[in-house]
Amino acid sequence: MALNSIDVRCSAIVFRRGAVLLVSRTHDGKAVWTLPGGTPRERESMAACARRELFEETGVSADPSRVAFVLEAMAPGDSRRRLDIVFLAAGLEPGAAPQAREPGVGPCFIPVDQLNELTLLPPVAGHLRGLLYQGGHRYAPYLGNLWRPADSFRARPEAPFAGFR
Image (cartoon, rainbow, N blue to C red):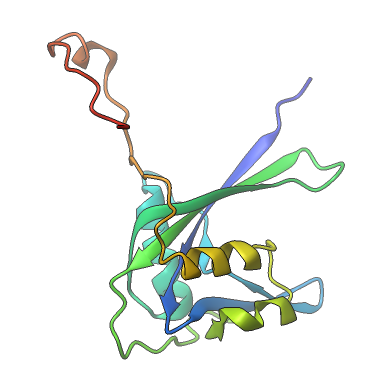
């Protein structure tokens, strides 16, 4: 049995005054909306990817410091699956205006109450509204790259786990 291939994508959620930053694209001849994001480059962290893609697609700079949610998409009959790590980005400059920086990509702040009128891919409108209305308090911690050489763990004395309390 062949293993499924996994396409990793990193996206950023940027809220401003009840609206979320989305980009318009053409998919199968139709206009669709997505969160700004893309594929990490070699040796690039997931947060760095989300930050870079946010700027490349919208001209907006913000800090994707917290994971809002992780989603998976796999079409029926397709062995490829997409894993999207979606960050909540903060630190947007108050007057920052999105600008089209890539061909075929149109960034715009869309009021979250109008998301159901759009073709949003993947369909996360309810999650975006919930995240906004809860003040961004629900999130998953982003631990970053935790790789260490195996021998580095033996050199340190045991420390109590100080994670979840």
